[in-house]
Image (cartoon, rainbow, N blue to C red; front, side, top):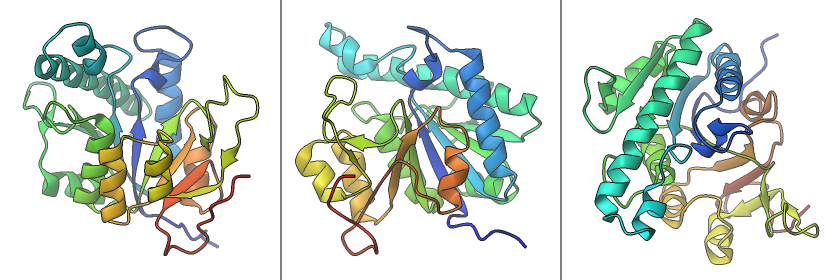
Length: 250
C-alpha cells in the first residue's frame, strides 16, 4: 500500500549559515552531503523538490552595508555567494545520482541556467531537483522573499524553512531557558510579534497567497520526509481559516 503524501511539490529554504555546520565560515562538506541525502530521500517518493539557498556563510549584504559598503553592491555580492552554495549542493546531489538543475536570477550561462519559470516547472515534472540561486536578482530583497516568490511562481504546496532550531519559539531558546515552542501560528501573529520566521515581506507574500510555511531543524534526520507525509514537525505558519491553526504554545 502506497502512503498518501500531503504535499506533492515543495520548496525548501536553506540559509547559507546552515551549510557551515560547526565551522564559523564557508561550506562544511558533511553538512551539504547530509542535506543532499535528505533531499534525495524525499525526491525518491515522487515529490517535486525545489530549493532556495542563502549566502550568509560567505557574504552578508546587509552586514556589509552597515559597515559602510553601498547597499546595492553589497546585495549583489551576497547573490553571488548564493550561487557558490547552489553549485556546492548541486555537486553533492549529483554524487548521489540525483538529476539537478541550478537556475540563477542573474545570468551566468557557464555556471547555471537563467531563471525561467516554465522551464523550472518542466524540470520538476521530470523529477529533477531545481535549485534557485541569486535570490530575486534584485538588491534589497532577501532570499526569504525569493523563496516565497519562487514557491508561488512554481505552484509549490508549502515552504519548508530549515533552521538551527526545531521550530518557532517565543524568544531565543539558546538565551532564554523559559522560551516556549509554538506548534502552530498564523501569519499575522508572526508579523505582530516579530518572531523572525522569515522577513516581513516574505511572510506577507505567503499570507496574501495562503502559502503555508513549516519551520524545522535542518539537522533533524528525516524531517523533510515527515513533513510531506503529513506528520507534525517543527512549527507550521498558516492562515486563520486553515483547519487546526492554534494560537497556543506547546
